[in-house]
Each structure stands twice: as structure tokens, then as C-alpha cells.
Length: 253
Image (cartoon, rainbow, N blue to C red; front, side, top):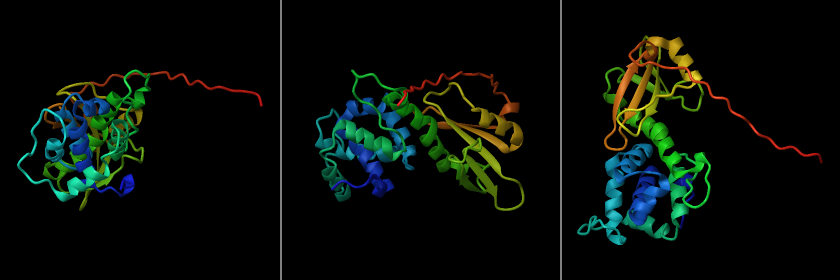
């Protein structure tokens, strides 16, 4: 019996992500826009509030069930809750399963039909990039924050939906003012950073209380860099403007 996505818990989402990658193998990677399993483990692991190793372990657990080149856990008894999910979701097609996994991280479904024109926001490549530069990077920050000296003694408020120009507001337990953290993610070890106008304004106003937290190298092994007061540091930002043409259609009724 398929569950309503809203009723699926974190562990079940991680199991289903592993099942999807095992069952559909390279086609599954292509459907979600990942270049490798390592990249998928990193992005989905952190994106689903877990660890990359968890997604890999679930994939390996299911591997003996499917005709892929990996052996998986052939000599280990599969866990009952994993097999129950495999049974419940056995009939899902590649497209529907990809849509389900994408929905776990709040994304629009990726398009998997290679011969059809796609809109950028729906393309598999766009999905993978949005996950890495958004949800996965933010969850990475949440995971490592308690071990970072600048942030360890603060209460965390998620402000990603508030449009205030940063992703997290860190409140001290005593005394001082809050700190603001804007999180960015990159597939590679280096690349371009983009600040929106609101983020740039917030960085200018908050100055030393604004931190740019950059998670790099999701393709292999993520690591992070922290830039305090980024507008007055080694980063050099260049203003760019883009004019958007909006087309509408009208008719007389």
C-alpha cells in the first residue's frame, strides 16, 4: 500500500531513495540529474537529513534483488521494513519513482523523457543542481553546525521561507545579537557564488554578523568554507543585471 508522501518518515524516505538507485541504477541517476552515485549519495543523504553512507547502505541492501553490476549485501539478511517498502513500491515506474524521490526534498518532478523538450525548472540536471545548491547544502550546515566554534552555542532559526536575505538566524543563549548565515552549495571544489539583491543588502547591513557558509565538492566529498562579513573580505562581487521579458496572451470575450 503506497503511503501519502506527507506520511512517509525520514528513515522511509532514505530507504526509498536507496531502493530507487538500486532498482533503476544508471537510469535512476540520469532521471535525477546526477553524474555519479557518489554525488547522489551526498546530495540525497544530506538533503534527506541523513548521511551519504545511509543512502549507499540502503542501495547496497537492495542490490541483490536487481540485475545491476554490483553484488550488494548478498550474505546479509535484508531488514523487514526495507522489504516491506520494496513490496509496497514495486510497481512504480521510473518516472513516478523519480517524481516521488524529488518530492521528498521539496522539488518539482524531473523530466525523464530524453526526446521531449523540457523547461529548465523541470529538467533532471536542474533538479540535481537545485538540491545541491539548496536543500542539501542547508542540511549539511545543520549537521555540522554544532561542531563549528563560531556557531556552537547558538539556537538555530530556519528563515529560508521568510525572504529576509539569509537562510538561518542564530540566537545566542545570552547577551549578544543574532548572527545571520546564508548557505550556498557547489557541485565542484570551486565555482561561482551568486547573491541575490536581498542577500547582498543583508550582508551590507549586518556586516560582521553576516556569514556566508559555502559547501563545496558534492561531486566527491563535501567540505565547507566560512566567510564572515563577505562583502569586506577576499571575495570580489560584481553587480549583474538581468532583464526578464514576460509574455502574456489576451483575448476578447
